[in-house]
Length: 183
Ligand SMILES: [Zn+2]
Image 1 (cartoon, protein in one colour):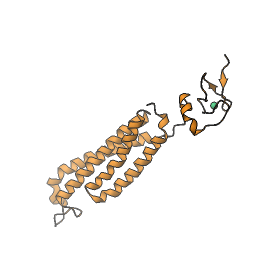
Image 2: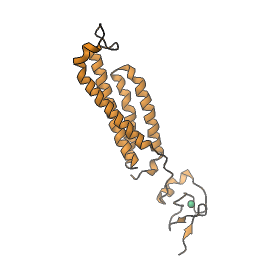
Image 3: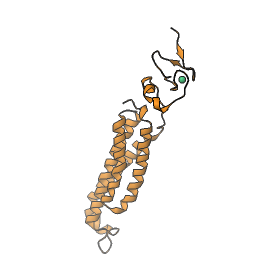
Image 4: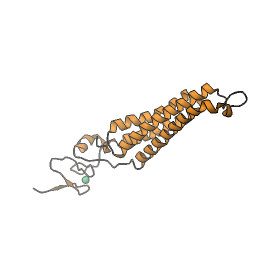
């Protein structure tokens, strides 16, 4: 039996396939049409992957955020002993009492650590193009968690919003490449 070739890109088309697995064109050469995604996926066609270095940057952020969390926990543990040196003559550190500072450091530590862990796992799976839905959910979690740092100290809200915006941009990049994931 004669092998069929795509009239658009010239690559071979497997028997029974209605679309070119290389360029996604229909058998008559009609170019890629978004509404026909279902048939293209059946033909094994995949759009170009545009994630580039994003998974590695996610893991880098994850490692840095986990380290920041660990540093915050260490600082929390040392606050009591060093408070007298840190505080001014009114017993305040950047306008906060010892209790307020402890709470702020604790909240910042917990939420940056959790965000980092989510980003680390999501970045690892995205790098392997596996577990699309879990990667997406963890990336959203990594984006939203920094906002909760503001529960400890309101000044952290700007930093949280910046991290959240970057995180949601990365989430959208994963979403755009969803068809490149194996599962
Ligand atoms: Zn083709």
